[in-house]
Amino acid sequence: MRKKDHIRLALADKTKVTSLDSYAIDYNSIPLFGLDDVDTSTSVCGDRWEFPFFINAITAGGEDCNKINQDFMEVSEKCGIKFFPGSYSPALKSKADEEAYPKGYSVNLGLDKDPKLVLKAIEKSQAKYIQLHTNPLQEIVMPEGDHNFESWYSNLKEVSSKSPIPVILKETGFGMNEATIKLAINLNIPAVDISGMGGTNFARIENGRRTDKSTYLEGIGYTTAESLEIAYSYKDKIDIIASGGIRNPLDVVKCLALGAKAVGVSKIFLEILVSEGKDALIQEIEKWKKEVKFLMILMNARNISELDKKIRKIEF
Image 1: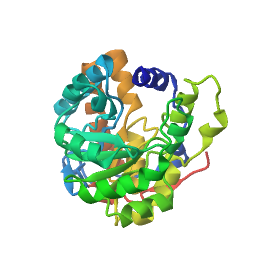
Image 2 (image 1 turned 45 degrees about the horizontal axis):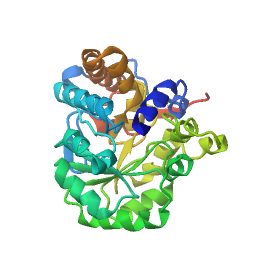
Image 3 (image 1 turned 60 degrees about the horizontal axis):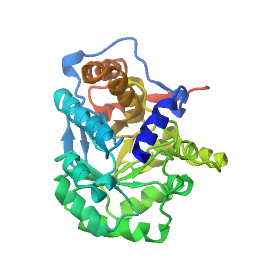
């Protein structure tokens, strides 16, 4: 029920303006090359990805949510982009959810989970990456939230040292500060997903499930742009993944120009899948793939690395 509530409330929470709107790309009037010269591939955790955006963790557990993941698997395979399923937590409690969880993609669990469970989940899901999500603010607002915060750092440290696959430390919509990024680097974690404010606000969603609301908590955190600005000076020490309010290919290239290696997309793809179906989502993703190339041509960037800093801050 909680996962279905999250889907319902997330789809109702519309993102119109984000921190990325305070940036403009470096537009060139004279293109220097054509579509065939553009390389959209990127490298994350030492792996080559054909495209720099992907379907980011959204949901899992229960018949409806498992069907969403099944559809996303088909879409990702058809389009050749990466797919990261949502939380594996339901699979820890249900054999049906364990069997339904996507195999051979990635696995997602929170820092509150015992490292032994995380390592077992990696094995059972045959995952290529482990997204360890950190969501203390959501857990505080969530009616049934876990408050065993004293174990989170030791859990992260143990999993990061024992995981047989790359670890991605993932925020859940409240952004990352410098201390968090430094901590990840010190633990030799290969990537962080800064997941900034501007997209789905889980404090607002959890308040929507409470009768005794604490709405003042909904404004805590760092925006996606702020988080990328903070992370920029560390991009050569750890792979930066951007997410949080990504609405279109322009947002994608802005994040890449601000130092991200890849960009996670959640709500806009979910909206299309739920309202229009798989074929419509495939069509939209193919459009994004082409338009990312078009934008790179406008920015005179033949590859992702050439996008670096081809962006400026504007009054908004």
